[in-house]
Length: 128
Image (cartoon, rainbow, N blue to C red; front, side):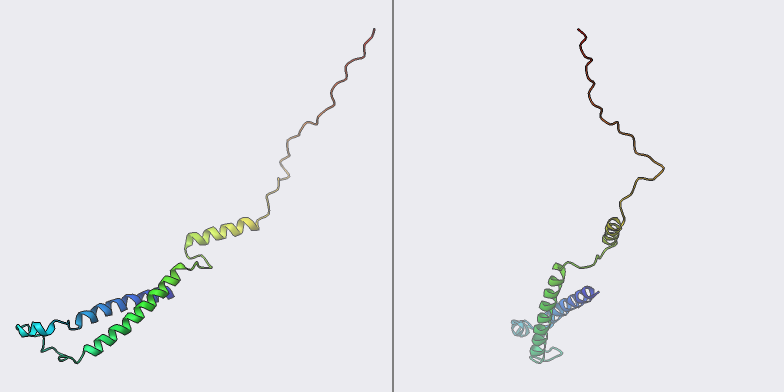
């Protein structure tokens, strides 16, 4: 659950960074205004938001970096408990297998009789 929340924040930070970078004025915006592009008459003024957008971009970039490290750390940890249904079933089967005593031969079935070895036969004595 925590991983999903951090991933959601990570994606939102990425989108905000893209939005802020696109909203900032480029270095050559003044040259475009000289040729009639109209970039100098923006909503926020000529330099009014440059520092705000650049500071917000830096903060969001630092948060993005932090969430990237957190997600990388969480991705390399092995969970103590099983996370999928298959892993839970395998763990339950392993517990049931080790907890069950070995199966004994039921009393209705008898083990096959094994013939006992006999001593070798003595040759008859010579009658001469």
